[in-house]
Amino acid sequence: MRNRKPLMAANWKMNLSLDEARDLLNGIKSATIDFNRVDVLVAPPFTTLRLAHELLAGTGILIAGQNMHWESGGAFTGEISPLMLKEAGCGHVILGHSERRTLFFETSETVNQKVDAAIEAGLIPIVCIGETLKQREDKKTFDIIKTQLDESLETSCKNGNLPQGVIIAYEPVWAIGTGKTATPEMAQEVHRFIRRWLIENFGPNTGETIRILYGGSVKPDNIKELISQPDIDGALIGGASLKTDSFVSIIRFYDS
Ligand code: PGA
Image (cartoon, rainbow, N blue to C red; front, side, top):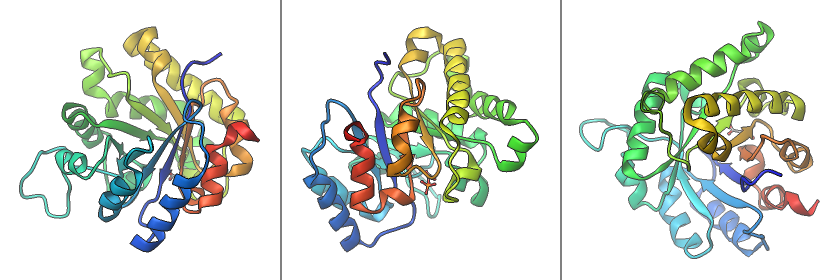
């Protein structure tokens, strides 16, 4: 029996007006959620963080930024610092999402800098990795995952230390927003590989404690099967997290 508590994390991406966000947050707030069985997190756009912080105060629902710069301040037009995220109410930050890597040319090297800065600032990073369709078809999935892990967590590997709260999100790029989900077995195979990598680099105590989320077209009707896999500890949810009903059904996977 796994003793990692499942985490359901909503990645809103660049969606929802303030009014829409208020409705959704109030909807999640009024749902009956058994927080002994699941942790819940929302990652709204930067301009919605304050609202989320105000509305979710005292609920136990966690808040994350969707990205962050590694410097603490300076001439970085358009960027946001770790401290700014903390001041806006975040305890977590998503780093290295495939949309950041592909559309905004982020590399694992900068993801590593961001991970270090987040840890230093007391933010918990959710580090995203995942292969493209071509890489999967070329049978390079495990090589890619290993390289992304080695490089995105390079400093932690060198120190032999990864803070226990750090979260990994495995998101096959071909499954994001496409309606194609990896089968639970395909996802589990990669999660197991990531778990072994964590144990090799940081020892069994840390490796068995770190939560590994699955992301890519997670929906109310596939969450139960995914989460029943031994190394899938929750989900990073895009599209299906934008509607109260579907996000709440995913959160309450234990009821279905
Ligand atoms: P999706 O997005 O659920 O819409 O596929 C997941 C993600 O990109 O985090």
